[in-house]
Length: 213
Ligand code: 3PG
Figure 1 (spheres, rainbow, N blue to C red):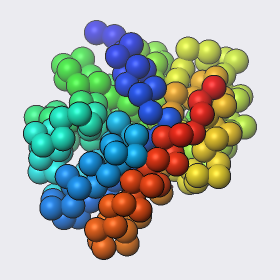
Figure 2: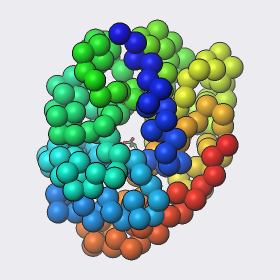
Figure 3: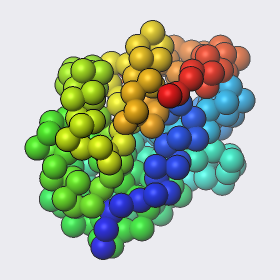
Figure 4: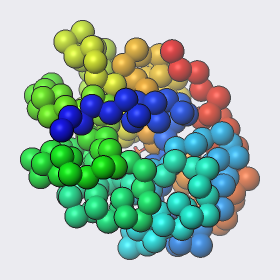
C-alpha cells in the first residue's frame, strides 16, 4: 500500500504553524487546546512525552472535536496503534524506522515521518511517503537545506520543526516545499502551568496570521 496521502498534505495546510505540545496535566489539555483554536490554530501535536499524553489525546478527541489532534514523538508501531485508538488523526515521528514503514501498510491513521538528510528522504519517498517533518530543522540545515531538497525532490512537502522561532517562521513559510512549520513556542511550560490561556491565545493568533507562500 502506498503511504502517499493527499489528505495529510491538506491537513498540514490548515494552519501555518502546528504547536508542539508537551502536556503534563490532563486538566490543562482542554483550556490549552481551546486557547490555541481561539487564536486560529487548528492542528495540534500532542507529544507522547508525558504519562498523560494518550489520555489527553482521548479527552481532546471527545471534548474539542474541532481541533485536528496529532500524536507526536511516535517512535514505534505500538505507540502508533495506541495513539490512533485514543483518537489521534495522524502521527508525527522524529525519524523513520523499518518497523514504522512496515506498520504503515496496516495502520490507517497517516504518519508524518521525520527526515533530516537526502538519504533518509529517499528511503521515505521510496516507501511512498510524500509529507515529512524536517527534524531537527534548524540544526539539520534549516532553510538552506530545504531549498537544496526542492530541486531533486520536488514532490516532497515539509513541516520543519526544531529550533524554529516566531522570527524564523516567516522565512520558512516562504519556501515552496513548506506546508507549515512546527514549534513549541506556542505553549511555554510556565504559561501552561499558570493557566495563562489568554497569553497563549495571543501567541497563537500571532502564529495563525503568518503568511504562507
Ligand atoms: C519537536 O518535538 O518536534 C521539537 O522538539 C520542537 O522543537 P522546538 O521545541 O525547538 O520548537
